[in-house]
Length: 387
Image (tube, rainbow, N blue to C red; front, side):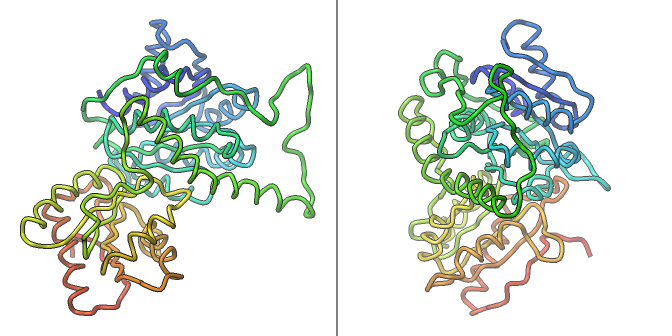
């Protein structure tokens, strides 16, 4: 199946109680499939057809506030229309799961991958994953509910997949029946509060300055707790189902590498071929695929940074005026360490432009050359930009 169809199957596997969604390409086939599964009696929850993405996220907010497990899917401008609800869900500590299919934000636009949409919500209080395959997307969505609903976390989770690359192409994945997932994921039972007409409470009212900051700090603590809880989630999942995708950073041949290549999404898997070829050519290089962007895996990145001489950091999006999104998180993570490798920033693949194995090899070799020459400059390179 495509990652979109697999996402709909994850909704069934996790016994999601409420799905609210509005179509936007390339995410449309996620709610479309949920609707078909609902019609066929395979999906047993409630499917709400709303009039916009803003309504979709707030229908999820309302449902989650009553203690229901909730899900929606969107993309690009649809995610941006959800902006108010994205912040609301995090501040209300509602473990909603959103499958965002990364797509270029208009204008100009197409249905192909650019990570600008989800990256613009890095500071909204959502845990963020970037999947590299259909199989990883499906199982990460299941794990996302377990992670977000843990009382030490209680934060929403965004599982991102590359537009067209994963949303519109087919691959295999290992499906789990709901009865199997039940062993891993119990029904959601909020530990703090839920809306109940029989037990009315006030929630979301005005909070004056002497208390507001404490609410925000508790969100920060919940996100930070996701580091440890995700380790437990992955450990238990591997024990039950034999699936493990590498932790927050999936490292490939990094142990003895002088230079590592970092990226997010499907390109991180493709980069393994480039690393294998470069290894055969005698270069000590590795691939570090960034699966989790929030909370940022600072400790893991510092562990990697202490072993290498250079990092070729690739972003499929841009913080305009300040370079790549993730490269600056990597630099900030390593700034306070005693050993600081050369970090070169590369931006490319925007709007779905192909980045081939040869392109990745060129990027890695450029960083290898910079390390050998003692280059210091941190300026970014917009890869394959037409002059």
